[in-house]
Image (cartoon, rainbow, N blue to C red; front, side, top):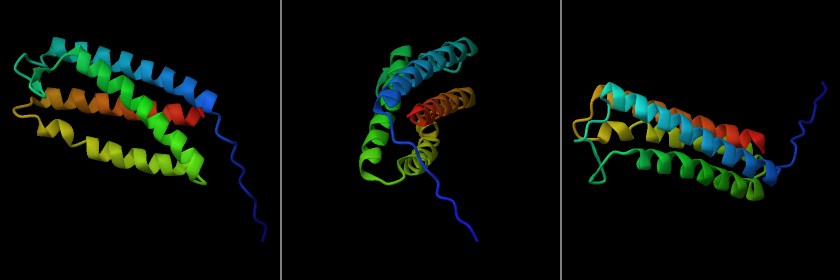
Length: 136
């Protein structure tokens, strides 16, 4: 019986940074498009409040761009302290994504369309975060 050792390339923090910035910009752009499409379809009525404020594109930009950068920072820390950082990151990302799945359901009187669009936004942010890490 022969075994083969799997080699993993070392993490490139430069590629991680470039990937994270690209992924954050892409997530922001895609989620902004989803926001405006959803707004046209009536998913975000003026009565929809997020932390006491009407849901706006500013919230979409903030909650799309910065979480991808935070995910890259988490991966950078894992890369420093964990032997298989990508594997651990993917597990953490899956758990966070699963937990984030329920947050749109906590919005009082949210329309079904609102929940669907917000879930799509979560998918975009999660996929962007994973893509950024794959670049490292």
